[in-house]
Every structure is written in C-alpha cells, then in structure tokens.
Length: 153
Image (cartoon, rainbow, N blue to C red; front, side, top):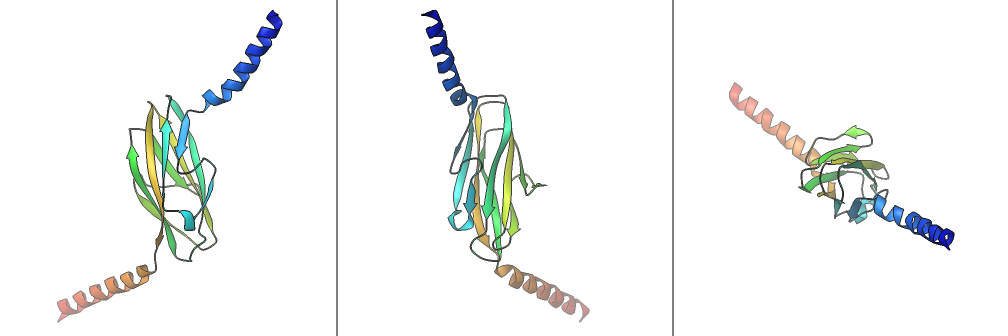
C-alpha cells in the first residue's frame, strides 16, 4: 500500500513539474514561432510570473510581401525588466528601431530578458513600406544643393 502511494506521488510530481517550471507567459505569439510579414501588425507581451528569471524569446520573421520593407519594433511597456534585442545576432538599440528585410528573406528576432521581479515587457512588430525613402533622399539632396547655390549667389 505504501509503495503504491509513493508511486502515485512520484507520478503526480513528475506530471506537475513541467507546468510549474515555465514562468514566462507570452501573448500574441509563442516562443519559436515563424511569423510572416503579411500577418504582422501584432503586439507581443511577455509576462514574468516568478523572479529572478532570465532567458530569451525568439521569433523568426519572414518578408512575404514586397522587396522594400522594414521590420518596425516598438516597445509598448516595460515594468523595469532588463531587456536586450538582437536581430540575426546583431544587437539593436534600446527602444524603437527598424531593420530592412528583403523579399523572401527571414530574420531571427531574439528578446533576451532578466526579470528581477514579476513583471512584463511588451512590444509591437510591424512591416513598414519603404518605397518613399529614395524620393525623400533625393528631395533632401536637392534641397541642400539649392541652399548651397543661394549662398554662392
């Protein structure tokens, strides 16, 4: 009888252990997901339910829309967690940033976190078209040339 109770206790502990081990809950996307740009106006929230805790949250993002798009990353909220973001292994600046992704290409976005207390971090991902960038650059160069020409006259 005691052996049976011990076996039941061991099975119950083994069954419940994986449920209590993960202290990171994500909304909007799951860790390891592949997300297409065509599906991408979305917010992702990471919620830390125990502390201290550290780890990473990874998404693979695929440009399936057009040749000239940027991945836009915006921080929505941070309850004081230490966060660093890399895209394909390159560290990104803290806060909001954008990075170019060619058509058919994919990038790996990794959010590394250190949660000293229970809290949360949220970010938004968006596919941002860049066709006006060339026209904007030419306008700026033309404006500088016009200013220089007026100074010489």
